[in-house]
Image (cartoon, rainbow over the protein chains, first blue to last red):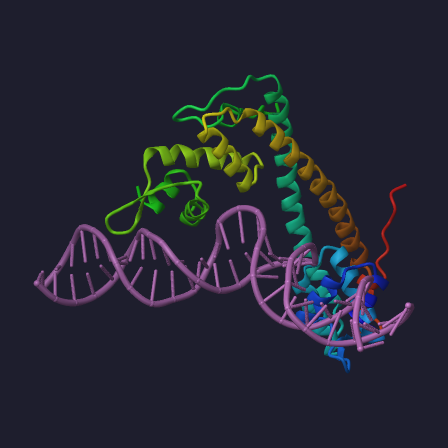
Length: 137
Length: 137
DNA sequence: GCTTGACCTGTGTCTTAGGCACAGGTCTAA
DNA sequence: TTAGACCTGTGCCTAAGACACAGGTCAAGC
């Protein structure tokens, strides 16, 4: 199987496959013409990688997991601990986005009824510089 | 004012100030010793930049805004249109994170009561490979 | 004047997870 | 054999700074 073939069969891009290959997550054999040749084992490996990415694991996490399982060990404990970390991160980012979203949409509606002003020596745009966040009671 | 001085006075890092300077958002004079010297005008510029960043504008947006206002034009229309774009993006990312968060926490709780398994030829980690998303009714 | 040490500087490299460009190779049809 | 379509690997690019590092600056002490 060639790069594009593999990628399409799992609904991803050739660049993604190449990327994972560069990182050593996939280890294709070298074909006669210098092209990389992916076996069925690589297909299931890629399938695993894509599932894990989809669940929020970082590529570096997946590398760890694959290493662990290549040593014949169960990767389950590692998987549980990693997802706990990632979930915490996601939660933080989520809260940050929530706050940002609120700020932005509050700014947007506030600005709709404010007039334009030309810049001055110490003011670039009064909309931004005078933005006041409406506190939730 | 030197880099670190400026940075601290506005609660940011020297690296951030250097970054904006590299991009041309700040234009310090060159001090005798080769150090960059920031005037009061730069202080208010940086203050503006930080406010805008805080509101979700990209650095490239801010560059545009500053250019506009340097030509003496009012940046307000541009500001309104840019934040609309950014808010839409933020909304998309927000929804994506919401979904991801749900998936992750569902996985986490599901996995807590599942046993460890050793890897096989076509299975790296059954937790991930057999993860089933619980559909919301 | 000289030295020590603390702090500061600019420059260059690194980060994520691939996307994109490009020069060249391969393969099929004519 | 040649044209054209498609494919390949390699290398550079992204956002917004963080970090490392070799060297410069400055005040205190001798």
